[in-house]
Image (tube, rainbow, N blue to C red; front, side, top):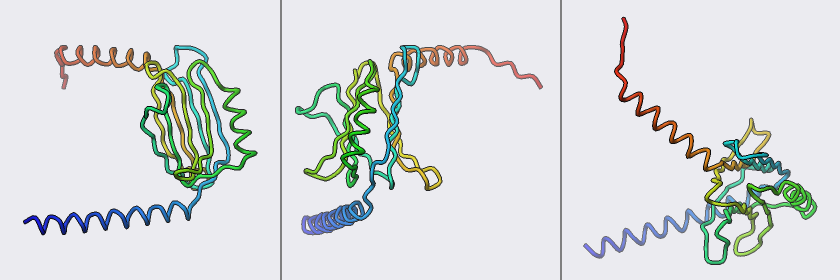
Length: 180
């Protein structure tokens, strides 16, 4: 029984290593270039969505949220886009836009990384008790590809959840009148 189990494990390791090599080769073949960045921030605390950052690429990017480590700040949300590139001039322009947009909700930094893997690192610095972040890839009819980051006001989300619970509780307790 132990020998068969070891053979299955060996086959599984070989399949996984081949899949990682193929995906790395695909990532290197289709290198996405960061073209533009759009930033927006809400002016006050009454908004549900308090920020939005849209990054436009030449090809579909792969986005990987990175976990916090002892080397990162507690308030940093880090995303990495492997096999992505940006020119030095474009990066300067994007950083200028991000600096002008720094606000009370979040700050944004974008950097080109070479090690351990080449790609673009995106860091949002915000209060994790006040702001939550979600990201989505988009591809608009093959013409625009990129990633959209939305930042939400946690206090507004909690207030909506509380209202939703009370409405659901009322709906469950109220007798239903069916008229034919």
